Length: 345
Image 1 (cartoon, rainbow, N blue to C red):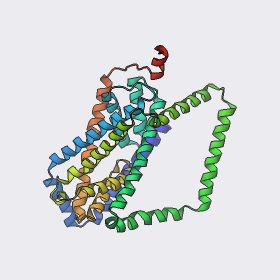
Image 2: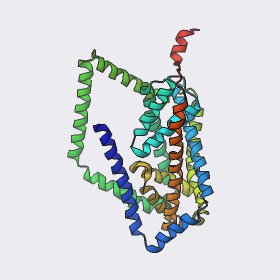
Image 3: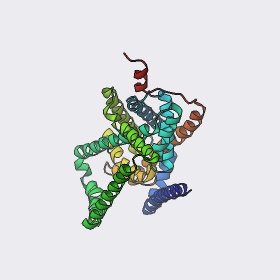
Image 4: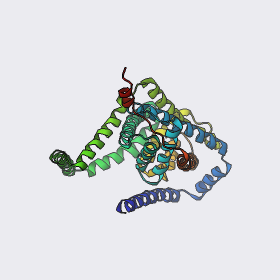
């Protein structure tokens, strides 16, 4: 009950933060700019938003294919369709509660494919870590390629904010966090050793072992080239999700593909900061497009159209996924190790 209440409070706080950003930015706009935003919504060619949603759909399909390559390292992967629908339930859950999606998609796939939940969760953590490293690489690539255009924006929005956070993080506070973490690890190691024969501890150790197995899946992938190919394709479709919306409103039709790349990189920060990017994502998009000569109102409208297209896709496919998975029978898969034991060569 307490856990459920905590999730409800957490969801409401993130929604409240998103609503705050919406009203904060909206009140900073003049009447003419507000009217211009509504005009963009009225005159937009929504077929381009549908095209953006199709690109988003393909990105999710290739993410499911890539996840199956990781699952293949510790178990027989289910059909791509099953993995895809499980993935979409996770995206839908993430709109409601941060990080709940990772657990949801693993739980769904574990039940439908009879695969270890712990190993699936470990593979998802490894996948997220890999994507984070790739994102950092893309972030610095964007800065290197478009530094002249981004210099003032970086100084004002990124570096100044980072300096303020760093200034508030005193050495004493840092030491307190380090000591607390060290004490927690020491306590955990003591409990695991002192009560290692207890059934609960044994289950926990097995859970950690399965998580570790899942984490290492990214290093055991057999089809490495295919894994990286899927990764590249995923990000290409992410880029298309943004670029195709450009053609939906007149003001952004002539923008270069490079601007969509910058929007992708910096817009991702908004999605990380606020759950689903609600409220803050359109603001970041408008600020980036302003650097390319687009009026703040037009950029804001483009940001909302892009956010709306992808959120609608998640809502539609996520809800469909729960329905589809309810009709799919659970299938028993045997792990590669089990097959080898039964059929030794």
